[in-house]
Image (cartoon, rainbow, N blue to C red; front, side, top):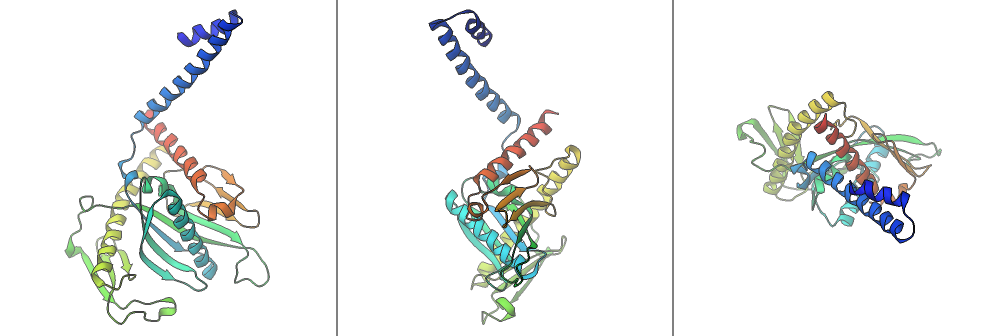
Length: 300
């Protein structure tokens, strides 16, 4: 009523009274917008997992050595983003390729809202560029997959030691050469699911086992969450928060200096800045789209 009265005063009055009415309309508009935001937030409770540390797994996909180089580029991108956010990174496992590439890297990101900010990075990332391994200057397409999991606490997932097969072996570097003279590397197989985690970055077998169990526990929690997300996605046809790891989510086009996120049809022409960790705009847009989807689910 107050807003309607002020609008009416703007139409019928002049001078100071009209100016006051205009100020009231502006103020009330801002207040209504803020109340709307509060109401939307109450309708969509914050996911308690968002505050957890994130376990990030990057694997080189199609594209051979160039895919491994791209996987290393993504790792560097997330490392720089973590620095900008004031987060810390702890390596769990790396498998190196040639030319500073990474066949696989698993790392833990700790800090405020780490999982909440990184969760929408899960999926297949595709790169289009002329590889350093290409002599004729042709553009190649390669890919790497990213999985972002909430770090699991012991109370989240009950692991029966009898369901684990634990192997120890010597650590190996690129090309398979041994980098350690003791059996410090650990491979844990979760027999019921077939999930396998290998950790060999620490010199201590005990530390590698602890890290491997941490990653395994997070993967098991993630399976539980993913099953719930998939069920919800099937019911609601979600685009952003489906948790589908096989979906192509983003393309990095170097010749055009362009990054496109296919889930929200967002294209940004500042590839270099993004590869240097400037991910806030992408992350904010994805979080906003994810929020809108959850709001739709809660209100339909």
